[in-house]
Length: 118
Picture 1 (tube, one colour):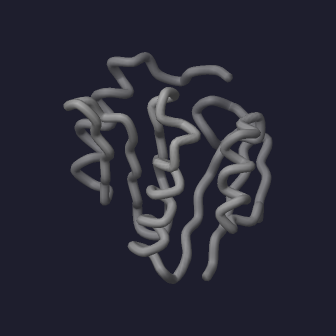
Picture 2 (cartoon, one colour):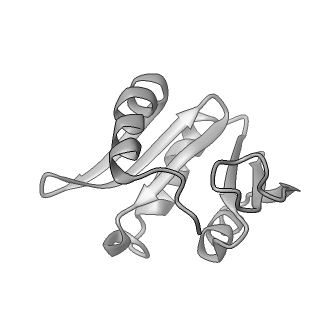
């Protein structure tokens, strides 16, 4: 998958946009961030886990938190090639409602919009 931004740009965007503007939650271990969840209205905008923390229940806990914070429903986007993410969201009750050719995202990667309603 093509990266649209380098590491410095991503760090700046998280510092100046995501954290101040979105409802942001982090998981830490030993003083390091191992996971992040960012909600923007009903959109689950960001969900990242340190690869060493995948498969240990942290993502499940973040999804449960997001559902508690947005009990009327959530929407999110993920790339079509990201099969693990797609399986994860579908396991948590999200349904694919839209597919695109990627022309509207910076990576130009086909994506899928998911929706969860209680």
